[in-house]
Length: 121
Image 1 (tube, rainbow, N blue to C red):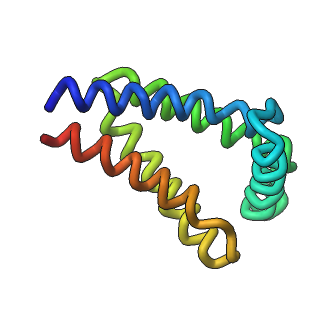
Image 2: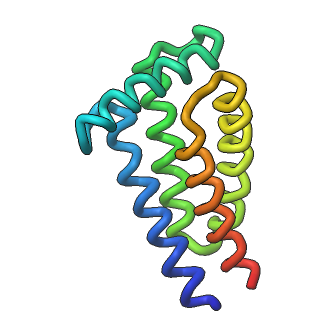
């Protein structure tokens, strides 16, 4: 399964890196612009006002690039997926509590779970 693990994790890493762009305001679609602007405001609120929406967006983008890069590099893959899993699990609970869209949360958890499963086989 090693070739599949590399292929899936590298693809996930590349998607993570590419998905950082909307966090900093580089649009991929008009729908994404509204979604990520709202998500940045929400992450700012979750920080207790310590971050502005723009700072929250840059923090989200930085995390995505870091996780994506670590998923591409095999020795750091499992640690990156585990660390990101904790962040996404917290975000999933917060999103559910606040009535936020759940599909992005489940998609991210599912993709990370697939990467981890293939890594363990």
